Length: 158
Image (cartoon, rainbow, N blue to C red):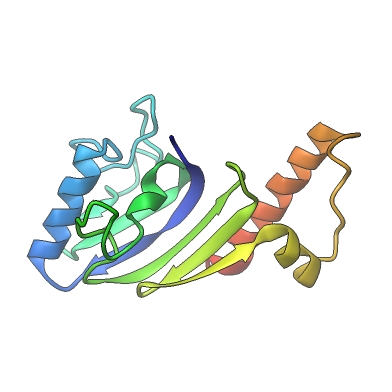
């Protein structure tokens, strides 16, 4: 089963071992290409090719460009279910994510500590805009979710 999420952020590592372990994890998962850019499921670069690569070897930093990712959130942990070290092990940084894949949620991870949000509740507390009835206006409801997710990123991804 897959889980899709929109993600943006960066992780920096204090040592080469942790950095290269996670670069390898991203290569094996086919989230990055040989040039150090994050790619989508069609092997297209998510960031603009004129941008610097997302893998910054000199600064031991992994920059996750704003984009739609399949199964990447599974590795936002210090250890995965199969007892491998995840992307957050030995890292500092900030990641923001949202998803409508079986949920309407989002989260902010800062230096390994995550705060999770139910985005409909977050919207009520921050914007107050009520959701359209999805049984009457499904397209309007989807547009509303996109707007709330974008507002969440604008608020949290500073």
